[in-house]
Length: 279
Image (cartoon, rainbow, N blue to C red; front, side, top):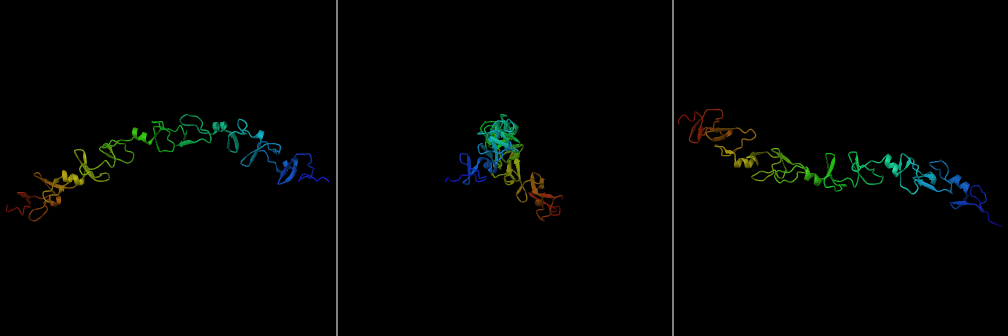
């Protein structure tokens, strides 16, 4: 007796007919399509087992329905993009949605590398320094007058140059007499200590720290012999080519302050009127 070979679902004999195995159980084509066939996203009909089923992210299409939503060209074996659930060939997607290169004005194709800055886009190979024309890539760059420059070219072309060393000033810097200096170049003319952030003065247009200026150029107090800087509102008394700190302008004998008072001189000494009576 011949063993039976029937459809697992409807029980109809499968001898001499096409069938499909699912989990080791045979099904006639009609039952298999009704139970397991996917539904086409485009036409809404079942994709039978005798049709090619094209799928993308759990969505399915007949071979003939897998087309670009705009130009209706087939997408089988072609790259495509998805926008708002619609399938688009790369040409249509580029024309509708892709950005254009700021340099060459051509479309930047989906999947290709691009550079973006302040709402503008470039092909990676078009994003180059305006001066040397070398690709900038992911390196630092500086925009100027709607053009982009690599850092070395920008420094060479536009960065201010230090009055002392003539090299570009790329960060910080000091302005003295309307001229730019590197912080490390702006030093005391005498001791070479940095002056940036420090009080200083000048002699013959050359900067000096207060210590060196006082030692080299300041007049000496006739009382204490220390320099009189005259800086920061320092008050002093001058008489016959001699100078005194306010606090040092005192009577030689009684030490009375003579600031704003009359006084007498005896050789190199100054005396109050009372101590000078016997001169």
